[in-house]
Image 1 (cartoon, rainbow, N blue to C red):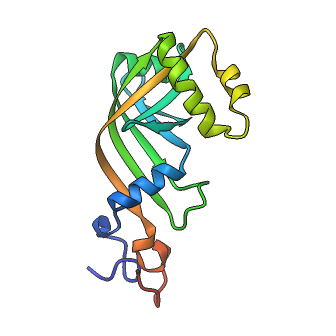
Image 2: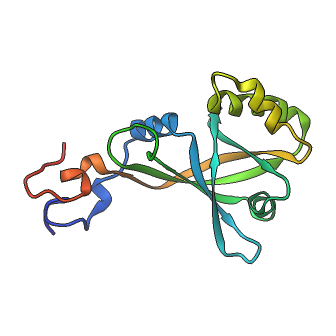
Length: 169
């Protein structure tokens, strides 16, 4: 096996995000891919906005969407967060195994919708809260259980794109 990013891209175990790197990515990102079981058991995914609070991820959806129904049937999910669109340098990602719960109650909506709106529309969250606060709206609580995989291209020579003379930091 050669030098990672110079000779090959085989042993990617050296290109993992550190704990601080995971936190930096999760603080910068506002969207993730939510992977869930579809009605036929086949994995499905959707891009959703999220906010983190108290060690949990909070999402919102409408009650009759496939991901809401899928979570109600099987709470095992994976969240995949990437650095695309964040302004962070390098290419970074983390996949987080989790268990999700759909909340229909008014109290949870009143607590979480302002957090989501404040994260996504910090200069005017009131309008976004009004858009989100509809009869079919639910809040999805996602409790992480493990990081299943992560990647940090900055640890690979040439940022993982190949460069014979480059070295990793």
